[in-house]
Image 1 (tube, rainbow, N blue to C red):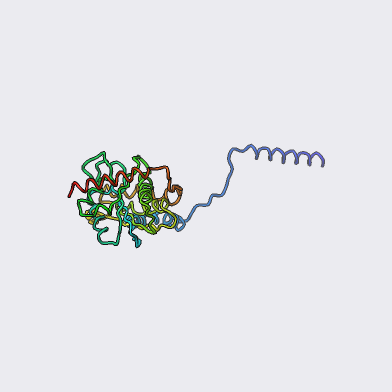
Image 2 (spheres, rainbow, N blue to C red):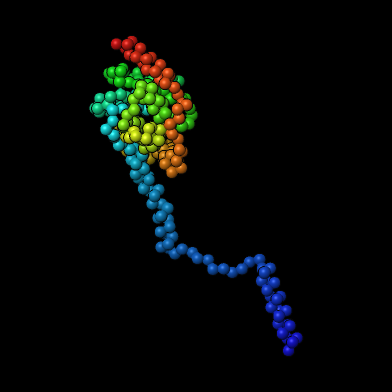
Amino acid sequence: MRSRLSHTVANLVWHMWLNRLRLVQRRTVRCPTFLGSFCFVALLVSPIAWWCRFGESFLCLTKRQPAEILVVEGWIGRAGVRAAAAEFERGSYRYVVTTGGLTDAKGWIEPGWSYARGAADELLRLGVRQDRIIVAPAADAKSQRTYNSAVAARRALDSFEIRPPALNVFTLGPHARRSRLVYAKVEAPGTKVGVISWVPSIDKAGPWWRSSDRAKALLTETACYMYEALLDSGRGFNPAVGSASSVAAQHFSLMANAAKLK
């Protein structure tokens, strides 16, 4: 009797060791049903499909504030500046601020000079009074150009002791929503920021996927806006960027050019 019990215990221990040394084992795997697979795919595809249909219009935000200051991003080109001049004349604006770094000939014929200065000269040629134009040249940079333009605009207004309760930013198409977000971070807490999205007439003719430039702009602005909105770059006004003296020098140089145009 004892020998049988000992043998049974020995077999039990031996089987336990064998179970521990097994290289594979059987497990139950749960797979989604057809309905479950459909719901999972729909959950992934639906946001992408919505963005492909409405993403461009979402980014091309136009939301005006009752403001006396209109900020024009000079890189939008001469056609965009002409549209900004019309906006300035229609609205009850007191000043127009032109911003931007160095040109790369996109939207302008001549590369290598200030977008802010070029936009200001174009506004002068369009009949905007010189005492209504403030030039805000931004620091030349390969990245964070919208941020640098926003900082330059605020410094320009501060240099003339202008602290507006609201301002509107005039920019190009899908860049509008991100511009509004960046300017809102840079401007003083009490300043409301509106935005006006200018869309060239040629871009209104068809859907964005028929234009490589519009497709590239949509993809780029989608990524940049998500970074700015979700990850929150935390960029605010940096008083070390630019100087009031450089803004004033640009302003007086613009007045000299205006005198030559007369």
